[in-house]
Structure formats: C-alpha cells, structure tokens
Image (tube, rainbow, N blue to C red; front, side, top):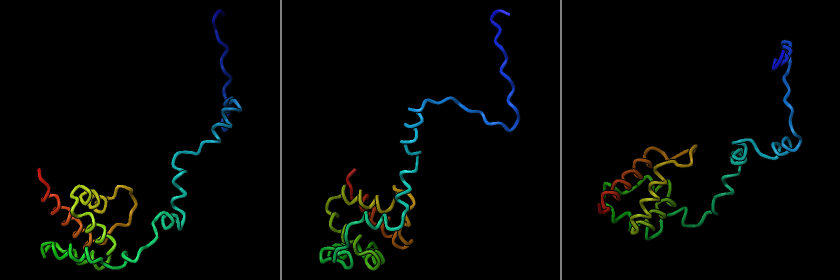
Length: 142
C-alpha cells in the first residue's frame, strides 16, 4: 500500500488524448511560422520577375567590348550559341574576364546551380560555359 500509485484508467479505443497547455505557450506557437512556409511566397507568379533588375539595352545585344573579347578567344572556344541566345551573359563574362577570380566566380555560378530548382541553360550553352570555365582555370597560376 505504501508507495503504490493508483493505475491510470485505460483510455477507450478511438479516443483523443489531450495535453494540458499553457495559453501563453499556445499563443507563442501560433505566432511562429512552420518551417518552410516562408519560402512559399517565392513560388507565387511574378515573384522572381520582381526580384530581377530592369532590362538594359545591352542585355539584348553584344557590346563592342564583348565582341572584342569573343574574337580574342581561341576559335574553338568562342561561345557562338551563348552569344546568340544570352548576350547579357556574354557581356557580363567579357566585362569581368580580365579579373580571373571574379570571372571564375561568375562562371561557377552560371555552371553550378546553388539556388536549386533553376531551369538552367540549354545543353549547347552549358557546354560553352563549362569550356570557358576550364580554359580560365587552366590560365590560373597554381
């Protein structure tokens, strides 16, 4: 009899167990968003379009500096498809090409998807970007 705890009555089948909760804790739990819910706003139509900068005239055509850069590359390395389909990218790469570390970082971002769920470039463009990246890495001193 001493120290003997009364047994807990068995719960009937199909019953719901309730847990005693403090109201302040419950209010606090409602104020916090569940994990992952914050990223849902990124899925709404038009969200990414609002995040991008406004298009510039140089986004639609190669600049003179970009054309000179392309011509300066070995003929087998010249990114013809990239020039035709994504002149904005060519302009960016050409602008930073003299700075090896910066151009290496930009090519790395273009070749490797770090954000996830990106559509990516067509295979021919991916091949040209990878070739430029390899060429640039071969030029870096070790």
